[in-house]
Image 1: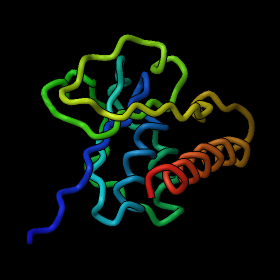
Image 2: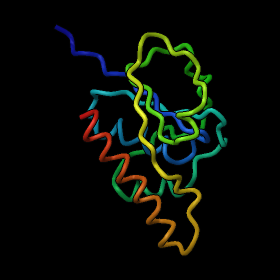
Image 3: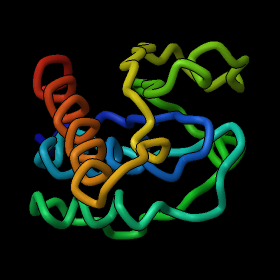
Amino acid sequence: MGAKSPSNVLILCTGNSCRSIMGEALVNHLGGGRYHAVSAGSDPAGYVHPKSLETLRRHGVPTPEARSKSWDEFAHKQFDYVITVCDQAAGETCPIFKGAPKKLHWSTPDPAKATGSDEEIAAAFDEAFAMLKKRIEDELL
């Protein structure tokens, strides 16, 4: 018998620069091969927020291929899970994805909107990271 193929996960946000990027990296890292996650945005920022990458690295999570991309890139692909991480993306009309993916919404405050000292901004990214990590552990693992 061959190994079961991983479940495909799409993590959506509006800009695909912070939360969905962290979610993608966390699912792939924590899932231990059980999941293959990608992330995308309805209106991609075109860059990955440096603090997202810094936060992931600080917590020992690899960030291969981290890039901001449109959900149109994945319209042809079949997913087992489609997860929105921002309230705006959850309310938008998503493309129709093949199959019948399980839809989850994990409302996560946008750390890119944090203001204050470097420590306060880093804390906002750490909070988003911790929220996403907990949801993945509770609902996927």
